[in-house]
Length: 392
Image (cartoon, rainbow, N blue to C red):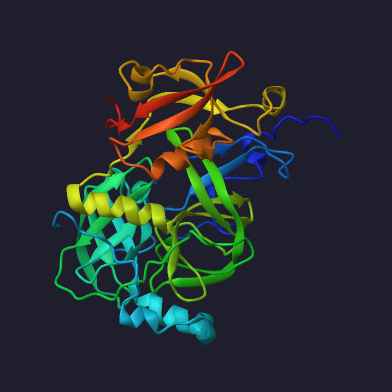
């Protein structure tokens, strides 16, 4: 036992999807240039993961496998359209695949290199949910529908903070759509169906099944804030399935497939999806204004460690490490070293929990933060702001 250093790069147990190549004889023609990885997402070892660092990879496939010859105030519907409502739990996976499959698209991106991902058509006039990393740096976008028809796509907007983007099909509908459900009442062990367009393969979407393995996962990213509140599933999710649909057994979309963990042999039981409630809210903002709106507290923080929590008599908290000058927290008097343990009558057991709770609020709202400072509990009222664009 004891600590073992991670193996050298060629011996890593976990790899970015773009690093996984077919074994056996060399291909007859060279692969297209691969897009540099922008989201390797290394994760520190946690309970149950031993022996090597875990690397999570976005599941966009790089390198083509074949040659290719908004009004404001839009609200994305929560209820299922008539076609999507036809697939109920009793019909099984076949009915779900037949009903939802026509709404799953392949998203082909041209830029410095070519890459492919998946998308979910969610409005009859052709708006497609996908991942921000799929369309990052896109100079042109093509959307290939389940019937094989190919249409030019237009990027409506992209939100790197949640890794969600919306693409509009530049053709007349109506298009087959998937019903957007909710992840609010998901339970671990609940059955799932994943539908995506892996590896840019021709011939329609791929369908896999599994269960909800865990909820509320935190997926770190070295290029920005971590993805929070993610759904973990053991339904197989292959490279190229970024932006695909994770569904419940009623055929409703409960998540957008976003990240996977790979061993040298392939997917090894770790797939992650952005809850559809988050994706829907971001899509509504993007369709209304072209960009997502996020509340802003204006702090950098970390989780309160267990020992400090025990000493303070709390279950956990978010430690304020720094306060952004001129931000809402600074204006309200929060300071480095404060520990946030509550937000408007909700307990705050961690930094991630604080961020998730803030997502339910709007800029301009005033919240009461319960704060530990120098061993005393105080209440600090903060008027939330709007998160500035990246780089500002």
